[in-house]
Image (cartoon, rainbow, N blue to C red; front, side, top):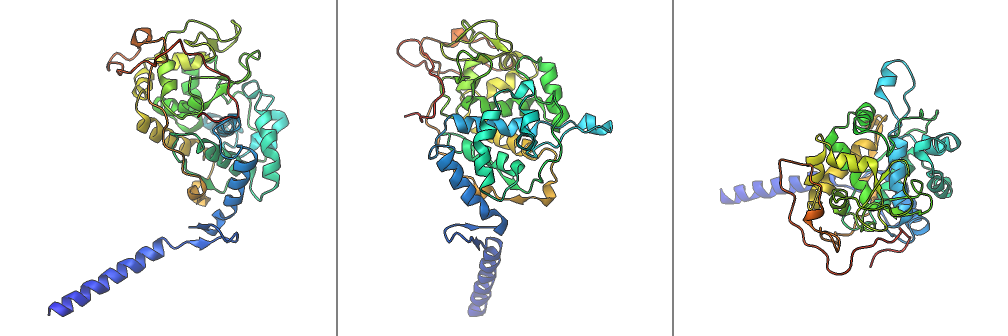
Amino acid sequence: MAFQILTALLSALAAVQVANGALTRRVACPDGVNTATNAACCALFAVRDDLQQNLFDGGECGEDAHESLRLTFHDAIGFSRSAAAAGQFGGGGADGSISIFESIETNFHASIGVDEIVDEQAPIVARHNITPGDFIQFAGAVGVSNCPGAPRLEFLLGRPAATRPAPDKTIPEPFDTVDTILARFADAANFSPEEVVALLASHTVAAADEVDTTIPGTPFDSTPGFFDTQFFIETQLRGTLFPGTAGNQGEVESPLRGEMRLQSDSELARDARTACEWQSMVNNQEKMASTFKAAMAKLAVIGQDVSQMVDCSEAIPVPPPPKSNAHFPAGLTIDDIEQACDSTPFPTLPTDPGVATSVAPVSSSPPS
């Protein structure tokens, strides 16, 4: 009897192992190196390697990685549900229209300067059998994977090529009011205020070229090579100076030399609808990364039929772990915080030692 029970248990275990094997069976890709859960994903490994070698300088979290992430937003947000409901063309969302119709869309005021990354990506797109819409979202996900602390973003394959340019005025501007920004995100894909804050974690590895053209490459926080929570800390510090010239549309005073603060970031950090969510990101790397990943997954498929797409997230590299800790920049303390969340105390943070922090422009060199 005991032998029969043992035999039955072994048979059940073998059946489970066979079932698990069927679920995780992988396809050998033609390159002889990679495997994938779906053969359609195999072509992406060559695209990934091309990006890392020829755009991202061997896998750096540098300017081209930052700009590729920015491009994912500028392409995807070009979608209006209210326009579609009124019988008008509201855009195709994440469909590559900003690349296909570059001469039109990169001349929209909100996308001034985006033509540079579109042009840098174009030769890589041409070398591979991939639509511009897929390429833009894939390149952004690969680029941010080079930034220590970033989440591994999802990537779904299967965006048809755009046939029409997105309408103008669908990309929020840094001088827009909080009301306008939240309404635009809600119209695009029913983004909540919390999801808007999550998406703005992208500014932790971002810089501005066109807000003040006298100082291109000016970062939005003091650690632009790391995907960390410094952006959410430093946007709440009292602004005292302009890093370049004063009077630029969409810019307000920042707390550090060499750091730029957008008017929209400043106001979202202090608005009653978003201030507590903004503060909740401070020193909470796990929350910032997970909410950013979820919001980006939603952004990346705006206007698309997800049922017709293939999950190829496995082609995205695993990002390096975080390399920084939340802190006040040298010379500043909690006394310099303009706290707008009245329900939760601001987190206790150390201050970096040394002379007052000054931030260098973004370059292609990785942080040490």
